[in-house]
Length: 307
Image 1 (cartoon, rainbow, N blue to C red):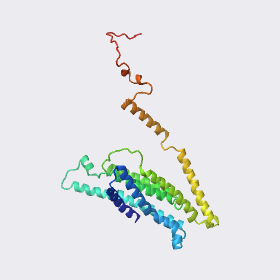
Image 2 (tube, rainbow, N blue to C red):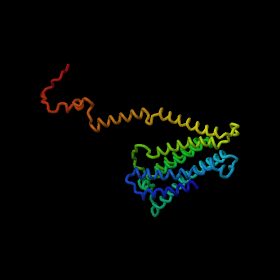
Image 3 (cartoon, rainbow, N blue to C red):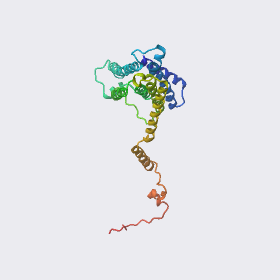
Image 4 (tube, rainbow, N blue to C red):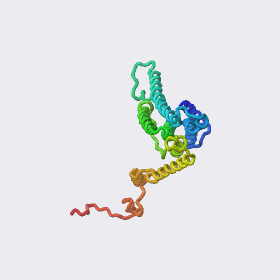
């Protein structure tokens, strides 16, 4: 159900964004990304938040004895179903579609298609929606792996295995199922960076609430005081936020060796392509320009010192 609603809303969000008619491509992508992320966040995680925090007050009890077990089973099922769905959507359906197109292209002819003709029959890669859909899928999985890791500690491992599998699938698609996309550079990943940071903050708050309010304190600490739960919630989140702040402060966004190579590249471009003179040495920057306008005698014989 979650996958179906996400698929349907992808079409709706694209249609709404096209009707908005943003002025630039960046504004178009940001508007589409915001719509997709907002809907997928609610559609993908609302049921888990209900199980974690609202099922007991509303229904009186959880289906598996306690809400943590119920949440564990729910997230595990979604992880497995996403893997199966990805295999069908990214492997089986494109293979069937490609075979159908090849049959249509070769109908009525007996000769084999040339390499160029086979390349022509491949699907065109949507450089906008293809990238956005890939990031949207990764963001949803990142939420599953972090928002409820207190209930499913193996979620990061499952996410790693799933991502490894998806990398192989997407690499195979780009090589054998799509025409070669035109390479283009990008300054960063755009709005996705902010959205991943929001998910990280939400993950800290979500797991703090799971540990403090959903976990059975009576069996672990032999105490069920509200003040203790609030204390655990506050202390946990500030402790994790402090670690995140220290990591951001200690680790540079751009590694030192990458920064050095970028400076070298900028220097070479500055000198070789832009022909910019050296600082405070404009006369000697170009040896030919140094003798411009001067009367230099030209000798008929070699007057250099041969000794």
